[in-house]
Image 1: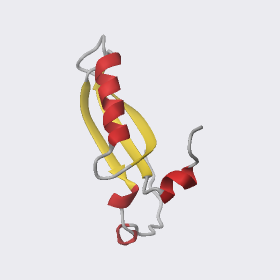
Image 2 (image 1 turned 90 degrees about the vertical axis):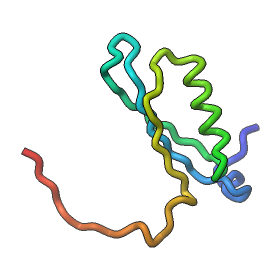
Image 3 (image 1 turned 180 degrees about the vertical axis):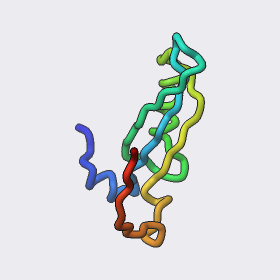
Length: 89
């Protein structure tokens, strides 16, 4: 049985979000992105590295780069409430 999110957080896990940029298999000059989220342990990130190894082994689109963040990498002082509106076109 898979542990609940609360059980994972009590064991030190935190939400990890990764954005993987990869080359399209048929159009290698085109980059696409994929967002992955899972509860993982910082700083080693075993679940993230397991997923990246799976991607390299099973997915045709070769990875270009991976950006990720973990709950523990963000502190409350880094968040600021911003109020505003952006108009495009």
